[in-house]
Length: 211
Image (tube, rainbow, N blue to C red; front, top):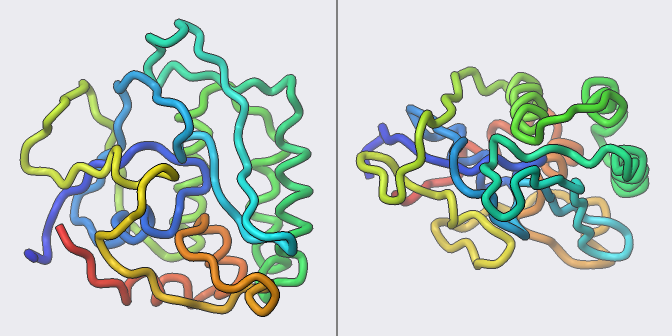
């Protein structure tokens, strides 16, 4: 595989670790902005490890144009008070992790301030996570929808809860409840960050990607 490649990703809420591997490894990163919004994806959900096993956190959304709503038009249903529930779940899952206290002040504001647009919210939290991890590069949003884009590794429908991700093997690392529940692969980047802290970059960088 060439060391330089471009990748096209979907937007994601606290993206899974494999999403962040490609963000780190790619020379150019594009995020799809004009697709018709699909259901049951990482665009508005993430997976974390809790004492009771894997838990899905889902942002409630509003499709302002029904099933024809584009991803960049999706609004967040803030009247459902999802932020309070999500933050409580993160505290319950990671309060005893090695680095939760270290990073909580940087991440908690995203669960206090209300955002209207899902794309905007996701991008803001992604950029914050990039700065914390030490990933310094720009992200571009697509300016049109292409079904079969050229000269780019298209992962829009590859990194999804519905499919087994087999482009590479994710490394194992310490997890708070691993002794009880076993190791969960492919969780949100937040799981890796709270458990491994400054080593997060090295864990991501250790992966050999296949394009």
